Image (tube, rainbow, N blue to C red):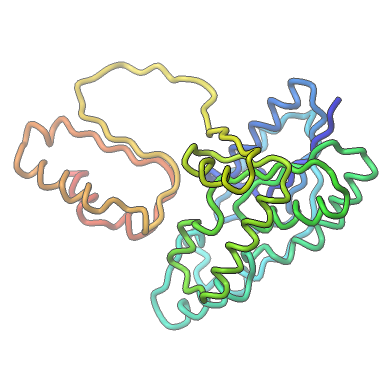
Amino acid sequence: MKKILIISYYWPPAGGSGVQRWLNFSRYLAELGWDITVMAPENPSYPLIDNTMASSINPLVKVVKVPIFEPINVLNVSKKRNRDHLDSSGSLKKLILWIRANLFFPDSRMFWIKKVTKVASSYVIQNDVDCVITTAPPFSTHLIGYHVKLKTNVKWIADFRDPWSDFFPFKQLPMTHNIRKKHLKWERKCLVYADTVITTSPSLNKSYLKINNNSHTVTNGYESLIDSEPDDKFSIMYTGVMKSIQNPSNLWLVLKELCEENKVFSKDLLVTLIGDFDHSIITDSNIISLKS
């Protein structure tokens, strides 16, 4: 059996979208006969918790937990909201965002890198692991993959669920020019050193092929289709995470105006939002008006 070590920050009981990809891949790979080990944080502070996710772990998958220190626990002034949604209201929060953007590289899980590199390198050597897979964000996992590759020369697959230097939350962070250049430098470095690169979209894959010609797209998927009864509704559905920067505010405005002008359309319109949404989206007056 081929042995694979998957290094992922997100693992049950983490909720949200980030955990789904390799939780499912690990399950199916194990069913196909691969020897799978997942290395995950022992005491993480996940922004979302879903205790039902543990039931999806294949019992054949071995899990190794490594302690992690997350300074965001100290800096986070609002524990009630999902801290993945950035809040820059007020001087203190602006200072916290500046510290997060410029002092923690590549992210606030940076203190996990040295520890996991040591544990993972030993595990690779002692267990004759054939391949290490790192999945990001957080991009600290790719730095771990880079260092494990240098130490052991094991085959390394870097899975990019999102682009690194062009990661959309970075656009909201008050990063200095030098830090942005540093992200670009390490993104390229990891792409060059990885034996294989996986992306979730053709557009990102096209970009990364210019640096690593062994790049491939493996899109996110679904387990099965759910049959539903057809109806005559004009349906719009969004599932996943939506940050404030992603809010299609003009869409909500246009839909609101259409509903006010055309009562037939208003009765036919069905907008369904499923997932984790920034507070500014939940309280958007145009979205609220569509509920009535």
